Length: 226
Image 1 (cartoon, rainbow, N blue to C red):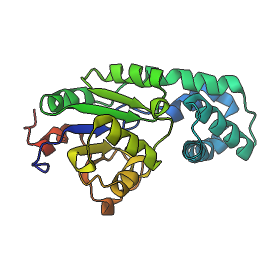
Image 2: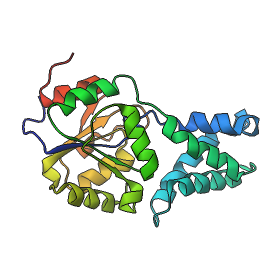
Image 3: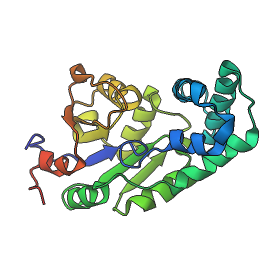
């Protein structure tokens, strides 16, 4: 058992950590033959970078984040941008489901400690995606509610205030050092879990526990493996 003191909450990033964030597959499907194979990898890589960039300025709804990042990327690689493509990508998001084993691990952990989501999704999408997880959450905090996106530090300030906790009273779980763990470390959250799904490089100096199987998460709280 790593976390010997029971936290008041376990907080989770959702998309890419619990929900299989299938935006690259969705963009490939929506764009079809208009995304040539020779530029597809660059398109997806650049679009991810622009999504992050769009999240670090003034708040805008996530459908605009998707649209602006796709528009900027299309211009960058010389492809035609269509608004209906961005809309189709955005509208697919709430249909995504959890990674294998997530629902089971969350339900086991929820027997011991309340679970919270803090996500960059809009409120409507956040609620539907949380339902797809089929696990009990005490609170679901969306970027729309906060008026700010992670990795901005204000998102964590909002979460502390909303939950009425100090940073040492929770454990934060995310698959993204870039969106979550760097900011969490700066904001004083010592107890962190990196659910390594291969999206990003391990940044072990941030001081988290790294797992590669979600079934190991309850074990960190002293619960036996099923």
